[in-house]
Image 1 (cartoon, one colour):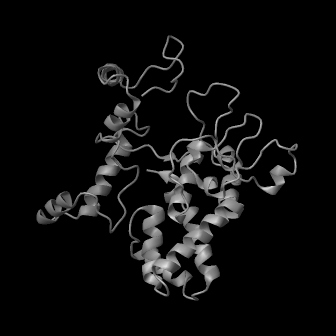
Image 2 (cartoon, one colour):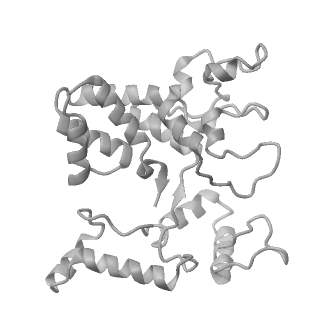
Image 3 (spheres, helix red, strand yellow):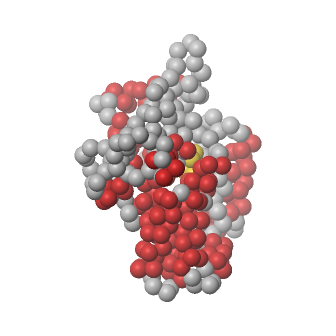
Amino acid sequence: LVDTPSDLGAMGEWPTHPELLDWLACEFAARGWSLKAMHRLMVCSSVYQTMGHPHPVGRIVNPSSAASDRSNGTDYQSVLQARWQKLIAEDPRNELLGRMRRQRLDGEAIRDGMLSAAGLLNREAGGPGVRPPLPQEVTSTLLKNQWPVTEDAGDWHRRSLYLFVRRNLPYPLLSVFDRPDTNQSCPARNETTIAPQALHLLNSGFALECAEALADRLEHAAPGDTPRQIELATLLTLGHPPDETERHAAEAFLAGGSREDLLDYCLALFNLNEFVYVD
């Protein structure tokens, strides 16, 4: 609603929807200053639930709309494409919020998503901050006891909310995905796209550990059943069954039936834009 969230005064940018901003402020007060209530209000809105791209062929969000279009002799995908082109032409910067603004997940959400898909996420709530092991190239530069690793290995996979934050020693995965500098205030996170992000998701010990665990999970759930493994892997990582194109590509990749191929497939899923971005 405003490009300068830390400056709503004369020096800041003018809101694109001042009336909506006023209404949200009134709702915030009326709901007892509850951030949780405001988050629920926003994510349940029709604006938040729009898509940030034309709907993929073969996946239908609103079956009733699709059925109505077919009954009128209209091609559903053509209607969607026409609506999308109209949105782009009339509001190229999306200031009217006619579609979802594509956004990358924060590093914390990426880490938690990988752990959840792999079946490793520890959902325990409360307690002190956790210090999981750091990569060797980082620990080799530290002084003794500068990062005492948490003794209980089961805590290493707790949600990122519980990772201990040391101002002069940022956690590598979170740092590469634009975690703010804790030495200064940050009204809004930056969002960059840089090579170390892809390299980290492909080569880091954490990414390989999650890929191993996901492969183990697939083999345990569907031993020797490649089509079922593909379906389950896509559901766990992307939240939907594979379409025909995705299924054929995965079956061709896993045709050899080796463990290494399955590991690479799991690692590739963690590196898809669809896993890292919300649109």
